[in-house]
Length: 498
Image 1 (tube, rainbow, N blue to C red):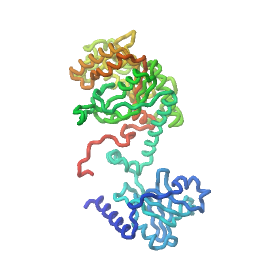
Image 2 (image 1 turned 60 degrees about the vertical axis):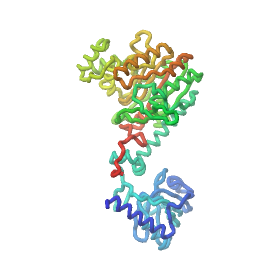
Image 3 (image 1 turned 180 degrees about the vertical axis):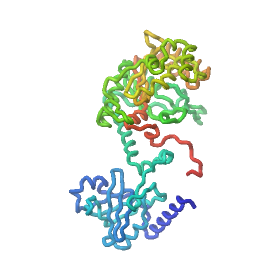
């Protein structure tokens, strides 16, 4: 029998002993608390000498013969409990031997301060609420059993409940994430945007360059895709007469996993009629300013050993100029596919699978420019080949009215002055179809339904997408997307690993 199995069997034996005494912790449906644990500490002066009822998980047990000290933890914090044989009597006091770290306990008693100055409840009655059959990660502190930190990365991500259980700083990250999402909603609601919901199952997965997941609907006997973007349905709403819409939703891309990518992620997209690219830049600046103030409390945010500043205005950097500065590739070298490939090979990039100038330009951006974009920055003027949904620049139709915001060397979003010319959009889709036929699995598919909607007329509009996960990474100073996802995608466990 493994050590884990031995621990589990010991706890099962204790559960049986509790039940033999008529105390089945799993039969308890409700326990009425008068105060949270933190409330007892915060209101200690007025509660001293008063009776309280508290509950939480046992995180430390320190038996001392005829007395036992214990710490409980709930969502608000920790509090010490004090059990005395003379107060409880031997029958009730002996039940403490059947309790373990990780169990949930309800306790009633009087608030007082110990000789060492710690706020404490002297327990007169207690009720086992749950028996934990598996021991949590434990450490040792001053000879007592105590909550231990969980540092094994595989276990932290795969068993996030343990990570949350024993690492309070991890809980704070996810509490902050929820506050960030709530702040984003407040920001948009205050500006008159309408929050909407669009389909997750889509016949055509468009709006981005990505490989979708495919599923089958049995009743319709038809394959559908999990959405890779929110864009094309939100634009349909502009056609329908809404002028300001946004959605925060889960999207799915059948791609690799890295510190910046997870197959399932949260995306914010918003669209505003009669707005353009510059309006979207101002929107991004205002959004991050508002969320940083609301959640962090200021416009300076730590980022590793540096500090990010979300003060306006953010710098605007032209993509081709940035490539020349960071990679030494001149703009004229990117005029043709042949010269662009030669430049790519010269700077050490693999060119075998590159079939467009735009793809080579964005590869140079990823390799040479992006690592230098630490402070919030807008990169503008993207190639048309990689931007099938953005308006062309009138003075240079090889480039489009598009920007991407970069923060802490991460691309956190994408924005356009949106195409509303259905003829131009069809030509772009046809060009993407040719790229798809030549082997580019991430080229945008033809979407006749969206083209039909555009032919009814969509007002000029600005559109914005922000990766919520990366936004949270930036504002919580987390290096990996897995650190801001409660349950990141992992390779399935084999049965023997469970």
